[in-house]
Length: 155
Image (tube, rainbow, N blue to C red):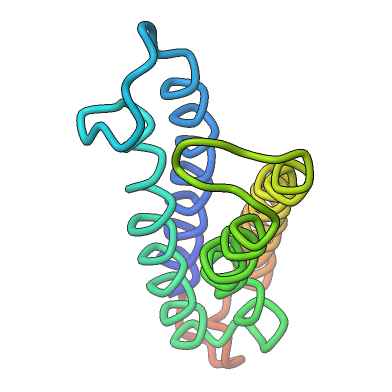
């Protein structure tokens, strides 16, 4: 089961790296699409960030619990979902309160929206930690040659 957990941490990392790529993909689209244009390339960034990363995070958390990897890793596994929630329900509403709209921004709203990138870096940091920890669990299991519960059943 720890191999499955490792696989899900790899999926988490791929989704997070794709998010950074898709942000740039959409940001450099030329000519710039009109505000609200549904065919804008930045839509892929939004879709990955609001659907893929949360889903993979939730599935990784479920697998972490089933693999009995410990409370710390279970908590870290749900962290990308929690950080996406922060983006959607804290950072963006605060930016609106600071004057951001679909048609314009203010200096204050840009200051708040800068936290969108920092939150993304936090998600990346969590993904890196998860991947390293999951790989360490695999090595530990391989060295011990036993199942996580301490029985002599090979993993």
